[in-house]
Image (cartoon, rainbow, N blue to C red):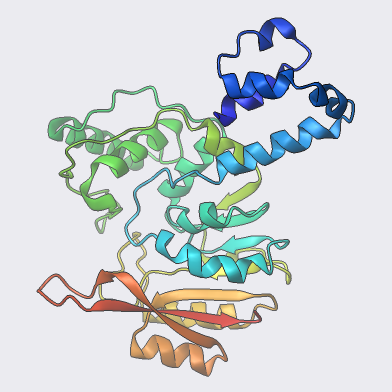
Length: 316
């Protein structure tokens, strides 16, 4: 049974001409049952049913962007921790492509990323983004759009709806979902090698979720927190390549983050690569550590050993 059809029938209950247009037999059978008239006398019946169907539909949302280093694989490990605290606001200082946020589906969230282009895209999705520019998986097309995107950045128009549309196209079409900038702030990811790309134009389903969430693009220490907040932090890995933004993220930033998280009164979970100094840092700060095998390899030189990931937890 199609949930969208059922929701439409709920919205039109009492309008027989509209219900007659419903073609799905399962839905018609439900609304022809005499008990439906009795249940409908309680105004909350359909409201609750509609709410549950909407929750079910939104729970199936996938991240709208391809995002290198996304933690969708980690959601099954985070859910049991989060469910004990799901009345709280979720705060993600490094929200990335929203794989964890959409997986946990909090009622309230403060989602931050230093990548202002990423947050600009989310802002326009929240405002009802519809992409009406041509979208083609073509190399010549890609480099023209990349050039136009960088021109917008040079002109200070990085927060426009045009920039959001181009960012989506570049993200879905560029190499491996990377988001990389050169030293002057220009987007320099090369063309990808996908045989087929299913572009999305209408983001209305995401808008319904995003309206409950607040988006920011600032340094994590600038975020305004409540003591009751649940923080999930997924910073850039403690590896040599950390140029996910013009500013980068070095070891001093890793230490600064650890101390900031340790000072929070509410629940905190951090994920990072389990390097020796990361383990030492969070143990010294009083965190409990558990280790997981990440679904990626340490290198591409023939070493097929799964990379180790650490979850550091405090106040859980």
